[in-house]
Amino acid sequence: MGTVTALQIVERSMRMLGALESGEDSSTNEQSDGLEALNDLIDSLSNQSLMLLYRVRDSALSVSSAANSYTIGSGYTFNTAYPVRIDSLAITSGSINYPVPEKTVIQERAWQVSTQAIPEFFYYQPVFGSGAAPYGIIYFPTQLSTSYTVTIDSLKPVTQYSTISEALYLAPGHKEFLVSHLAIRLAPEFKKSVPPAIAEMAKESRESIERASLQYRKRFLRMDPALARTSIQRWNVINDR
Image (cartoon, rainbow, N blue to C red; front, top):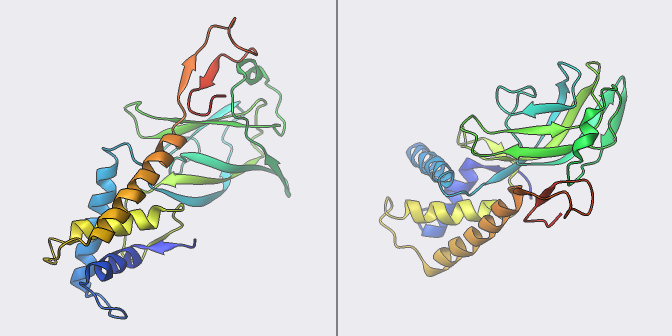
């Protein structure tokens, strides 16, 4: 799907409630109230372990120092909103772009290589519950040169819409979740009852978002090296690898 503005979500919710006719524009006050309710809804999700995601590209991120790992997040080495999942990563050296594939497990010994070279792969670990602002760590088997830049395509958590006209490229299923749950929140303000179809849509979309949120959280347990099939001593208990 394409980008979705806050206004599209608000007006769709109002139409579903019958508070706005087809083809009718919402008033400035309705838009302001709708944006506030939408952002309150998004904010409340952070207390429920749910993540609404949007897709974005961060281009030409500067490599400040040669290293095997880099933090990414607001105020961190790669200063941008932290990604829940990295879909693709490329290193630019001179005028040439080098796509770098992701590995799904960490080989601890690989991070000891100090040679500055285009890495053969990367591993990404989001950091949750640290008490600090959310961030992630990108690991490489070789150090990056400060002459490189990094481009990342990723999924990031929606925090809030800053304006009614802001557009985000939401992940699949997220628009339906926001529309249906916002309609339920707006119903008392418009003195409307929630139609059963909207309640069912909200229930189904929530279950879908809950499954997706669980999938994007990488959880590891430590293993006895004697039990591991390789030298790797971490295991993703969700992906079983």
